[in-house]
View: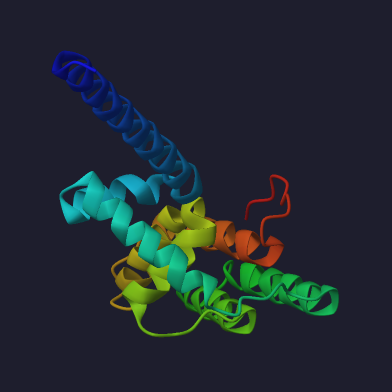
Amino acid sequence: MSIGIVLVVVAAVVVVGFAAGAAADRRRRSRLRDRFGPEYERAVEATGSRRAAEQELDARERRFAGLEIKPVPGEAREQYARRWMRVQEEFVDRPEAAVRDADELVAALMHDRGYPDEGYEQRLRDLSVRHGRALEYYRAALEVHALSTHDAATTEQLRGAMMHYRTLFDDLLADGEPTGTRRS
């Protein structure tokens, strides 16, 4: 074989390798975007690069795989649904207390599902793996909850927080099963 043919073959192998790597990166990026939803772009913004964000999201998936997250059994699911209805009814007379109770109920549900309580940021990272699309609502609810502890939230903000908590609550309770279109 001539040296020219060898160079052409080596160049072709390199080009095919780069193309295969690029295709694999696109598939991985697409999978992560689908899985994490808006959390994907949030991670890109927080880390400053797609590569770093994707490494972070992969690390979240690996950690999550080691957690013992379990579904809510039927009886407990019904109890949680009844507890949510009571919190929702409480909103009429005591909106700040209802938002606080909604936060506590979501935290209790996460605990019962097996999500560890290792602080706010870790909780968000863990939730992002399976509940990435509901996470923005949870963040918004937490912001209003913080305002309400200082009597700085309007009734409309509190109402929004209840709806946001409900979004995550339904998602956690259903664990991937269809939840319909219920909203508070």
